[in-house]
Each structure stands twice: as C-alpha cells, then as structure tokens.
Length: 237
Image (tube, rainbow, N blue to C red; front, top):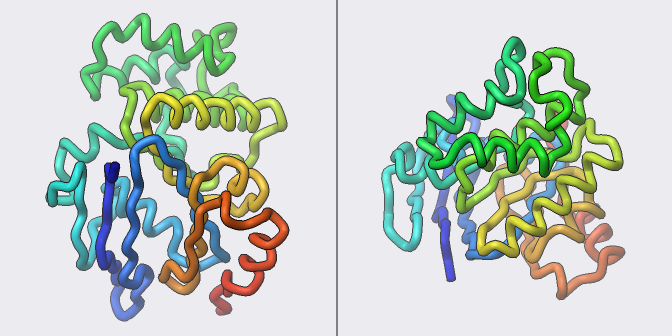
C-alpha cells in the first residue's frame, strides 16, 4: 500500500533545474535506495521530501491524500539523517533527545530516550557533551534523534559516511527493524553494495531525473553495478 508519493516534482534554482519531473512512490514496509553521481539531484530531492526545500512544481501525497508540502502532518511523519546532524554540540545526548522529543510531543519520553540510548550504544556517554563524541557516535545520536517520534518514513542521505564497521552494522540492523515494523525508508547513498542489500527497490538518478528503477530481487549485484556505470553520469564543471 502506498504511503508517500511525489508526482512530476521539479526544483529550480534560478535558471538551473536541479530536479526534473521526478515521480516516486514509497510503499509501507519498503526501503528504496537512490544512487547517482555528484550533481545528480539526490540531496535536493531528499531536502524537498524532508520539507527543508519547497518544490517549484509537482504534487505530494501522504496516504493517497494531496497535501501542502510544508504541512505539520507531513513533518511529524518524517525522520531525517543528512550531512547536517541537527544536534546541539554543547548539550549531552540526553538533553538533545529530550529537546527533540518535546518538539514532537513524544509520550513517555524518558522511557523512549532510555530505549534509544541503549539501542545505539550511547548509554555510557549520555551525560557527556556531544562535542566530545566521535563521528560514529554523532551519527548514532543523529539516528536516535531522527527516530525518537517513530516516523513513518525515514530519510537517509549518505548515512554510512564516516561510520566505522560497528556503527554501520548498527545502522543496517536498525533499518531492517524499522522496515519490519511496517515503516518505510528512502535511502540516498554512494555505497552500492550496502544500498543494494538494504533496499527492496533500487533507483538511479542522473542530471535531475530518475533514469532507472527496479526491484532489487530482479537484478544481481554485479549486473546492478554495471547498470549504475551505464546510467549514473556525473555533472562536469
């Protein structure tokens, strides 16, 4: 069953059209991975879906109902991990999660914070200032921040960047449990193997367009790598 849809989505920056007539559907309990070279428009697309940017044109649906893109209902059902971690460096992990939990009016917030700190291995450092954390710890805390309100759709923009093997495995396991709980994931990554194994559906973006899509079960990893080479044309200059 479809949960989130965009149809004919476009985004212009002056004379540059960064996203060109993208249509995408995310079903419940589904992970979609989008791949592409530099300048393909992947991050711009994620920012639009996350309500950080407004589209120039196109239609957005939530549960098959057309909605205004910056609606509170949409934001309350999204979680985002991106290059910006959206954490307050002078606060500790507990304080960061409490701040964002209050924004989303999370019930039983103390229990929810304890659950996430335990799940992501941050409990021993929960009272330490975030500015003392390693990159991997920051990524794990950012994931906890993104999911504290149990979003229906989790948006991941290059989430494996800077993660050590242990942190990457923790993220992969969480993605699987998130999907198994009936929720959805939209993943943007350069990591072909991790993206391929994590996703139900694969898509390649080039020069602002989705140029190729397939179920992951319909193509082998080796064939997908070749397909990526043939389709992911990077913007030069």
